[in-house]
Structures are given as structure tokens and as C-alpha cells.
Length: 266
Image (cartoon, rainbow, N blue to C red; front, side):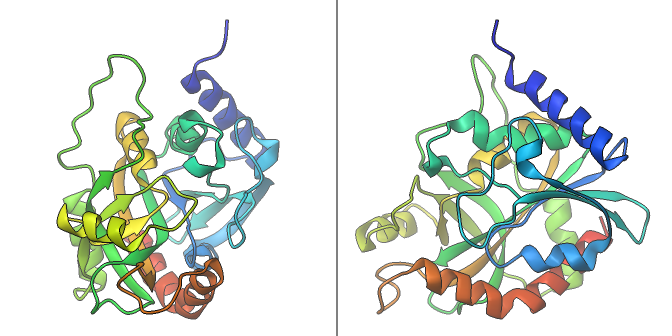
């Protein structure tokens, strides 16, 4: 009989505990494009494990994404689990693989998860390099990490408490609705306009399925996007992955310091 996703997650969490020497973690972090530098500012790295050594994880398929799972001791003595090998839905590994990191984090003891990403902005006044708190999302992948008759309330999926805490660090942080498309192609200008009409402010290819899985697992969620480019049709120039990487690198030091300060208060 095949193992359930939660059994595999428990095995992965046990392996992380064995290799890291840390019995329980408190906070999980998924650091998307542009956010990787935050890990070095959070605290002391006490363990770093190649992601492919942990059941259910794979080496990253995208340039600019990390390939390890790090355990970091914060100044307050808490342990942060940095999941550096995010599986995107467009990789074709299935929604279970996308949700795996969240289930492992919960099995490792995490009560809070911070999900970050690089994305396209639909608001012309959000220049590349602008961090935006996610207050809600629209999932256009036509998929869900929930299986069977599993009914989960998503009314307050992105924690108001955690967004308030982030505003204590930087009261100027804007908030927006994140729209996930399947990818890996960028959205057409018409699709971007559709996203805007239905209430979107940000478009990307990650995060929503992870957030749903995190809620199912009982974790409190903070989502933060980095606007790396204006979305198709908003921008007068063609989109490229190189542009996303460059914008993330330019904003990296500033947004990493912001995220580290937020995490210090969790």
C-alpha cells in the first residue's frame, strides 16, 4: 500500500531531525526569487542538508532558487527551517510534491510559515523591488493539495495578526491579492487584465497551493511577494527570467533585512 503524503512528510521530518540534531523547529521559511539573502540575517545556521537527501524533496529546477534545507537558530532561541528546494506546479511532479514542504514543516513542529515569492505587479505605482504583503489569493491552477472530502476554511488564510506585525516593522508595506497561474510561460496581457478585473494585484507561479496545504496542516501563514517586474501588458518591454533574477538581486539586501526583522518578532 502506498504511503500517504503525511506519512512521507513524517519520515522527512524525522530525517531532518536526525541529520540536523534539532528535535523541533518553530518557524518555516520558503524563500523565493530575491529573498534568499534573508537566511543569513535571521541567525546562526546550525545545519545545512542537501534537499535531495530528504525524502520527497528534489534539487531545484529553477535558477536562483536554493538547493538545501537549513536550520537556523534565531536570537530568541527559536529554530527556523528554511526550505530551499521549492517544487513548482509547472515542474509536473504533481500537487503532492508542491505541498510536501508544508507538510514536512508542520511535522517538524513549525507553527508559523513565511511564504515568499518574486512576481509580476499589476499596479503601475509598484516599481520593481517593492515588497507586498499578501492579504488573499486567487488560485487559477485548477488544482488543490487537499485530497478527498477535506473541507478547509480559507477565509483568513493569510494571517491578519502576522500582517499587523509586519506593519509594525514597516508601516508603508502595501497589501495585495496574489494570483497564481500554472506557468511556466508568463501570462499574456489579456490574462493579466483578467487577473486585474477579478481582483488581483500580483501574478506568479507559486505560493497558493503551499498556503492551502499549510492551513490544512494547522500553520499560521505570512505571505510576502517581491514585485520583480511589471506584468505583461503593464510593462512596455518583454518579460524575461533574467529580469526577475536581476530585480531580486538588486532588492535583495533591503528586503532581506526587512524579512529578518519581521522574523525576529515571530
